[in-house]
Amino acid sequence: MTNEDITLAREVDAIQIPSGDKINLPAGTPVVITQTLGGTYTVATSAGLARISSKDADALGVDVEEKKQKAEVAEEMKGAPLEKQVWHQLKQVFDPEIPVDIVNLGLVYDCNVEEEDEATTVNIKMTLTAPGCGMGPVIAADAQARIMTIDGIDDAKVELVWDPPWNQDMISEEGKMKLGMI
Image 1 (cartoon, one colour):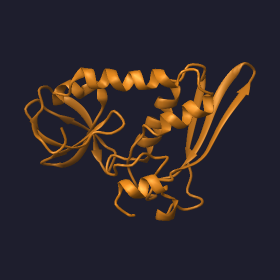
Image 2 (spheres, rainbow, N blue to C red):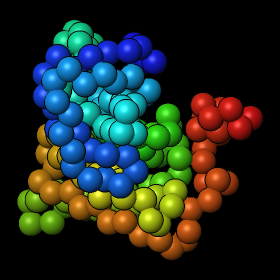
Image 3 (cartoon, rainbow, N blue to C red):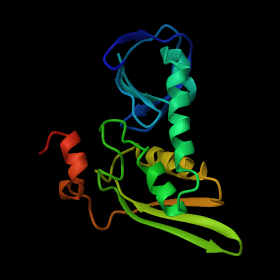
């Protein structure tokens, strides 16, 4: 479905890339889907790139069955250790401009699952490819939301850190393969 010309069937809220500003795309807006990863859709518009969430997939004409299949994959992870489920969810979070998840990009520095007073909290430390990226809070919120879908997790905190600075050597072999770097 990527790189097809599509006309939005209805109005949608979106996030401008790379600023992270919220925008509104009216019904009838022509868009081209450039990336469909992590349940979000990066689209090119006459005003630049924007990200549309999965809740608005119908406006793009995306098949609901596709979304259902993605939910079934998450079902397969139930029963796995919590930390494994957290890492799985983090691998479903993507920078809207890069077709590699945040784990394989090397953006997640620390994942800690803590159980205290009958509550389970996940603490994540992650960075971005560039400190000035306006999408940072959006990506961090995506990570937090994904983690909070795991049964047994009471809270998730995602902290953006800048030390050590990210560099391309932090990309996993899988990520480098997807980017054509090896």
